[in-house]
Image (cartoon, rainbow, N blue to C red; front, side, top):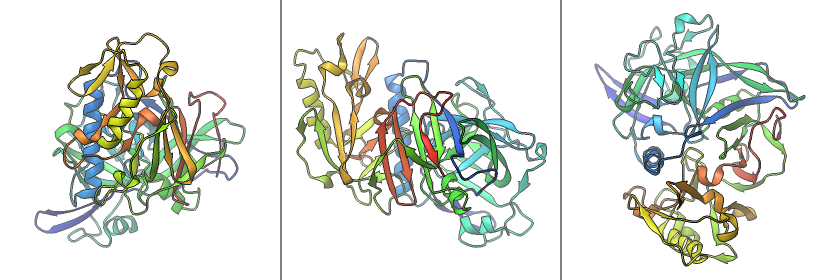
Length: 453
C-alpha cells in the first residue's frame, strides 16, 4: 500500500510511503526458491471471540484506509496479520520477528533510536532493535539515491544529498511510525532441488523505525519487530525481487489452520495444479469477482454487483483477517440454510453478534458445505469444521454480517483465514490472477508442494 501525505516543519515534505528494494543473490534457476516459515498468532490457545472481532475490525480499518483515504489510515499494525516469521538481518545476522502479510506492501523494523518500542512480546519471544552500527553490511539510504527518488516520485523538498531518506506512516487509530531507510542483508531459508533447506540472502532497503506512538509503543504486549509485506504494489518484497529479474512475480502460501504456522514461498507452483481466477484491475488489494454462493446443493439468489461498493469492487482475499465477512443479503440466507439442517438447535447469541449452539455429533455430517464460485469456474469450498469454531463448549458460526458494520465497512466482502487455511493459495502477479486448491499445509521435512522459478 502506498500512502501520500504532506508534513510541515520548516518546509513541506511530500512522502510516498512505503517500499523497499530487494536485490536477490544466491538464487539458482531450477527448483530453488525463497521460503519463509510462519507461525500462527493464536496457536496453542482457544481464540477469544472478542479478540478475533477486535483483530478483524482493526484490520478492516487499515484495508479501507488504503483504498479511501489520501493520508494515514491502515489501522493498528500490531493487528495486521495472524502469521509471523523469523528472518535474519545484518552481518553478523540477528533474528527479527515480523508479521508476514499479503495486505501490506512494506518492510520495516524497529530501530535502536526508538525509546517507545517494545522489547518483549507476549507471543513468547524477545524483540530486537536494529542497530546499523552493529552490522558490517548496513548502510544508510541518502536522499539523492535512486530508491528515495523512486518511492517519492522525484526529489524530496528539503531533503539534501547528505541526509537520510525518511519514511513515515500514520495509521487510522492515530498511531504512527517514523524513521529512515537503510540497506542491509536479509537472510531467509532457500529450498533447493533436492528439497534441502539452506540459508539465502539478499540486499534489502527497509524502513528503520526511530519513533513510534500510540499502539506501536511498548504498552502493546503482542507487538513484533516489524512487518514483511507480500502485497501487490511495486514496493512489496515479491515485486522487487521480480523487478531485479531473479524470480517470476509469483508467490504461494500454505497456512496450517489446525496446528498453526505454514509457509510463504516465492515462485510458480508446478504441482499440484491450481486453477486461477483473474484479479480485479485497479484495486490495491487482492480482489476477485465472485459469481455465486452455494450452500449444500442450493444456490443463493443475488446479483454479482452486490459485492461492489463505490470504488471497491469484488471480494477481498486476505490471509491476515481471521473470519469471513459477507454482505447482509448473502449472510442472512446463507446462515439460514446452514441452520435449517438442524432445526432443533437451541441458538445463543454471544456478544450480541455471534450465533452459537451446542452440538456433540459430527459437524461435517450434520451441516452443509459452503462453496464460493468465481470467474473461470474456480470454486472455494469451506467445510463445516472450518466455518464453525469452538467457544466455551459451544460451536459458533464464523461467517460475519458486514451489513452490521460501520458505514465505511458496510457490506464489504472479505474472505480471511477462516476459508484460506489448509489451502495452497497461489498469487500470480505476472498474469494478475490468483488461485487455490485444498492441501495439507502441515510443514514436513519434505516440502509439501513443488515450486519452480
